[in-house]
Amino acid sequence: MAVIFKGEYVSFQIRLIKKVASILPILIIVFLKINYDDSNMIFAGYQNYLNLFLVACFFFGMYYHVRDIRTVVTEVTFSEDKLQVSGYDLNRKFEDTLAVNHTFIEIKSRSKSHLYIEIFADGKYFYINNYSRWENTVMSELLQEYRRRCDNKITGHSFPGLL
Image (cartoon, rainbow, N blue to C red):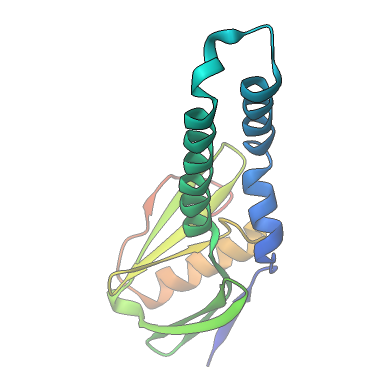
């Protein structure tokens, strides 16, 4: 019998805006300070180099932000000895089937109130509730189902609400 756990999908554009929103104003202020502040002549001969450096930093940062948020898991299905992970990679649907006995699960946190689950199998990492919305009760049920079907230990933080 298959057991299905679902989370809420968040589009790539929304994830990107949330991730970049805190950094973009700082880059804009630095750009304006370098190019339009006449009171500070320190940057007078180096404006082009500094602008090139800012553009390079922007694209370098965007590369790492996009790499971090590109994949989101929206559904996990347990069936017999298989674990099927479904979600979106840059707004394109993907599905991956893993052997339950060869998976490892770790509970992690980005802050005290935001928990997520990392699933590792076959050299691949999948993150549940990292950039999508999963309720804690659903994540708790998922962990209990994993514990019931597999002998592998769940590692990471110990949170009373999840286990």
